[in-house]
Each structure stands twice: as C-alpha cells, then as structure tokens.
Length: 469
Image (cartoon, rainbow, N blue to C red; front, side, top):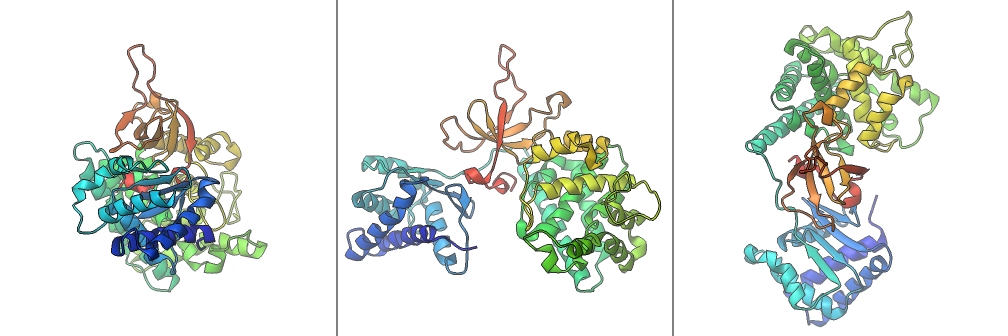
C-alpha cells in the first residue's frame, strides 16, 4: 500500500513549505512557490471530506486514517511528525482553503516553534499567536500531554508492558524456531508463562489492557500471548489453583504452534482458501500436538499442552476439526482456549478478515449457541472484560468520547465500565484524560453518563496503546 497522489502532495507540500520557511524565510520566491503548491494540495480535502492532521505518539493520521509509511516518504513523514510535535500541535485542521497570506503567517510561526533551538515553553502559545494574526482558516489543538494515573499505576503498567513484550519475544522465538526446525528453549517458555500468571494474579487490569493492542504484522505472536492472558484470567475466575493456571497458560501460549508448519502463502493469503489449502490450514491442530511432542525437554512440558493443541477446534458434538475417530469430550482447558482464541481472532484484523467490535463478538458468543462454546466460560470472559472490553472507544450520551479503561468491579454494573474521557461535548480533546466511573450517579440517583454507541478508534485517530503505555 502506498500514498495516494493527494496524500503525497499534502505531506510533501507541508514538509517543503515549513523547511523553506525556516531556511529561506516566508517571503522568498522559492518559499512562495512552495506555499502555493501546499495551498493547492489542501483544496481537494477542504472542498471535499475536510482536512485534519492528527499526531498520536509517532503516528500521523489524515482524516482519521493512519498515513502509510513507505520507503519513498519515510523521511518526509518523520519530518512532518517531528515538526508538529515540536510545535506542540496534536491536531491541525483546515476549514477553508487558506490564502497565501494566511499560510505565510502560519508557516512563519510554525517554523520558529519547530526549530530545535526554540524554547519549548513557548510552544503552548501557538493558538494565541494564530489568533493574534487573524488566521481563521487554520486551527490547532495541543497533543495529549499525558494520561491521568492512579497512585502506583504507572509503575504497574510499565511492569505489565515488560511482561507482555518479553512474552511476545519468546513466542516469536518459539514459532520461528519451530518453523526452521530448531528446538525451542522450553525454560524461556515456562518463565514467560510464569510471568503472565503472576501478572494476572497481581495486576490483571494492566496486563489485560495490553491485549487490546493490535499488531497486524505480529499477529501470530501477539495472538498466542493474548490468548494466554485471557485464559489465565478466565481460569482465575473459574477457581483454578495457581498450579492449574500455570498449566493452562502454557497450553494457551503454544496452542497454535502448529501454524508454524503451515506454508506462509496460505497464512497470508488475502482471499478465500481452496479446499486443499483449508485442509492444510486445519492440519495445524495435529501438527501442533506433534511439534510439542518433538520439543526438547518434552518431559518438562505440561501434558495438557499437547491435548489443547489437538482439541481446541473440536466442538462438544465432535464437530470442527480434526475429525474424531470416536466420541470425545474436549478437556476444560481446550474449552477455555477455544473461547479465548476465537475472541482474540475475531477482534484482530488479519489478511483474510476484518476485525469485529469486541462488544459485538461477546454478544454473538453468548447468544449463538450453535458456535458450541461453553456458556460458563463465555460468561466468565464477559465478567472479565465487561460488556464493553478494555480498549473499546465509546460515545456517551453527553456526546463525549471515551476509552474503556477497565471493567467495573461491581457485577451489577457490568455495562458501566471505568472509562477515560478523551473529548468534551464539542469534540475538543481533554488533556490529560481523566478516569470516570460510569456507575456514578447524581443527587437524584440518575447516572451522570451512559454509553450510547461503540465507535472505531481509527475513525478518530486514536492510538489505543497511548493510554496503556
């Protein structure tokens, strides 16, 4: 995927205009030509869908969609992101085709504020400077400066992130090693599982929140870790002992190891699989059991791991795959992994399917009995995530935008999670975003805020990882 001509003209135009304004001045002939080109690049957007550039961490969004980075635009992309960040611009919107004079004044201000030698304490005055110069077609808002945290939360989140990233690295090593025919380091896998179990027992919210992060390129590895986290948390709610949680976590982390033996062209195929390709894909279950059996130090691996790898796609009525030769009832571990794996797969975008809203997936799991999921396990997952899972972006009846931070600890308020308030009713971003309990009532006993709609993070240029970093 590459930039469209309009996107390229806009990003390149903004970079060149700022760069030339800084080194040549806004009145230089070469700068004026660049400004005119930038003005022309703005027209298709202002006269059409509108123009909004938003920076979230190191990602640039254009009208709610992330701008593609490729080899050709990498340098320009980074310069534009750095320029906006140094100028203390989180959102840059253009509401009318700006005049050359407006662009000259705007670029003059930005060129000074984005200078590396500029005093950063003056960056917050950009809005006032634009207003003083009478610029009405260009509007800016500051970036999210930080996220409100509870005492000790930042340290807990950092510990959770380290556990998550270390587990993904071990998962990557396990999958790639198996694909290349190398023996995996079982000790590392055991340490990763132990860290996840300890993390869930000590701080479930922080570690669970990271499972909301999506990474298309790393799907196989993040999927394994996410399923492990979900399974351990579900098992905890079902009353499993710590030793049982360890065995369950190990089985969950390696449940899809058989995928490492499936050809890449099948795994990454963007269209429907042929019958032959589908049969080869389904072989990952028994290939997974075989891969675990062949691991060095197999004796240190919980036996349930091999069973789960084989069974997690077998239904309670012997439907699914692989085909059974005699009636069998999948183990409890297999049932837990089946629910967790299906949920994470459905809410992640892959080469052959789009991600579905988490609340919609949970509703389907609960209502559609033909899926064959154990209702007790599905209910445990819903109690774990809430009706609105962590990382879900929602619109409130106050027209504020919010991000689900955690499920409410009160089972009676499962539909009223703890959220971070991202914007006010007018759409202005709140810095830093406060934590709000949607179960809170006013003096009359009425709820102060309620969720009316789930929306897409991409639509608003929201990088969910910003709020769980």
